[in-house]
Amino acid sequence: MGEFLLLSSVLIPLIAVLLMAMGLHCRSVALVSGVVHLMVSIFLIMLLWCREPGYHFVTSVPCFDLPDFFSFNFTIGLDGISAPLLLLTSVVGLAAVGAIPPEVNRRREFYILVTLIIFGATGAFVSLDLFFLYIFHEVALIPTFLLLGIWGSRDRKFAATQITLYLTLGSLVLLLGLLAFYFSLPIGERTFDLREIQALMSSGSFHPASQYIIFILLLIGFGVLVSLWPFHSWAPLGYASAPAPVSMLHAGVLKKFGIYGLLRLASPYLPEGMAQWSLILQVFLLANILYIGWVTIAQTDLDMMLGYSSVMHMGYLFLGVISLSVIGSTGVVLLMVGHGLSTALLFGLSSEIRDRTGTLRFSELGGLAQKAPKLAVFFIIGGMASIGLPGLANFSGEILIFFGAWTRYPVTTALAILGVVLSAVYMLRAIRSIFFGEVAVEVEKAEDLVTYRSRWPYMLLIAGLVLFGVFPGLLVSLAKPILSVLLAG
Image 1 (tube, helix red, strand yellow):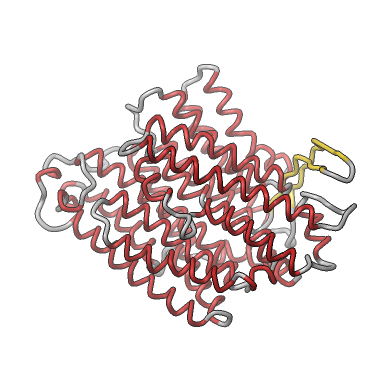
Image 2 (cartoon, rainbow, N blue to C red; image 1 turned 90 degrees about the vertical axis):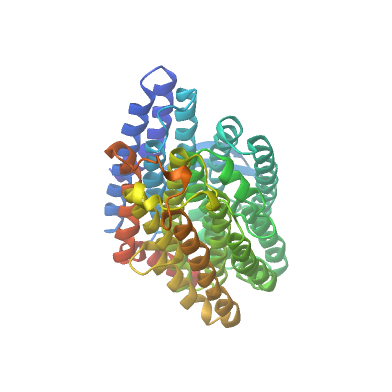
């Protein structure tokens, strides 16, 4: 049953795309597929809790075999690292579909492209073959570019061009890194299959010189996709210009692909390469946290502030990755889920604020809580999660990362903790400027989230933040056992 359900999780969005292309009611199809996708993800995780650490529900279909050169198969499977990200994709995907405005132009194309992002993200996280892991991510990026360029706001053409160039170049460097990884394996044992790589690497590792080259290629490739400083400039304007569902999916889900890749390949199989470049990586991640944190404080628009905030928090994830500890890496998995939920919530709500007031400039807002109390409560919960308030999902992830990184990098960790203060400054300032004080002219006629249809996408995201904030062990019990196996090798 597990194999069928996992294959279904990949096919459900694709089937929905085909049904919408055939003329069926796009919103109904997208919502039904999203609900089914979420139910399948939850059931798979429940099945996974009863299994030993490792890959489960594996399905493999041979695709290409050229002896002594390339051989790759369509292989999918699930373990304690990919399962939380599959669930994150389902939750944010359903919320993003629910947040699509009724009046959007060219509705059918919009829904199809959003669903294709969900399809690509799902395939990337459950693929056990590095070739298909890469291909599925590229499949998700293409509709992202189109949605930003056609339906975006602000400087959408410039933003679309910038994000396309950056992410395309990042993908090309990543491809070089994956090929270097593949060809560094012993001749006759080369494989793209993560299961075979794990078995092969358990008896040895790459030569240190090979690790240095492979790691820097993977770091640049994945780093561009994750907006690691100094490869980050595409992200803030891209998120601010994109339609809300696109920002929710890309910042909340697709952006985690780079961290997921480093956790899969670099941490367990390239530890010496990571150690060689650790000083540079520490500088980069601190720039993400401290420098970008200051830049975030300086923003005068909510959407740009949220864009820079998303970039800033990637620094914590990189800190957990380079900790090379089970505790820190487990925190990375928790924070990927928490950050994905909270940033999707905030981007969605910022769009609601703009629709109701016509602006996102702090100087033109104020007193919105008096006119839209439900919207205010939802945003404050998302803001508190972003800060790392105990009881919400981000807190557990950040704490585990700090504990895991402290032994190896105490100075870097101490400096990174200062980022929590910066987060509190810019988020509390934004909440005060938007929701409290005198009612601004632009806010006078603002309406609240008056219908259940307008509220449920954000209620779903908040439910996830609270559930994994109060019960982080639900995710820890999945991620920790498999990370213990990977990092022990």
